[in-house]
Image 1 (tube, one colour):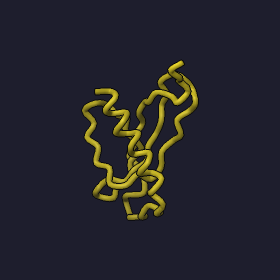
Image 2: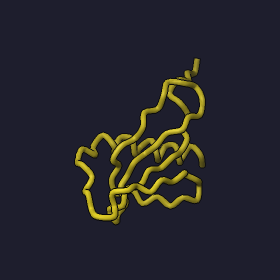
Image 3: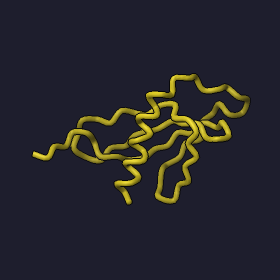
Image 4: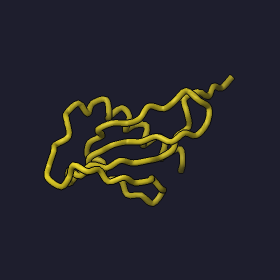
Length: 89
């Protein structure tokens, strides 16, 4: 299950590269909601605005994703992923 979450959040990384439009500044929606991801977190991701880079270490590291939901509200999601510094050899 953890691997599916990491894969789903990692696939959003690719989407972040396509998010080149500036977020809409709607009154009352410019202050992001900060959340810590859990397995019961319902994600309503309409547009990924930014993602933190994953460091080249071989350990679990905290990262952030800023996104806009289907109602236009900005969110910052804190979650953990395995660093990119591990090798198989």
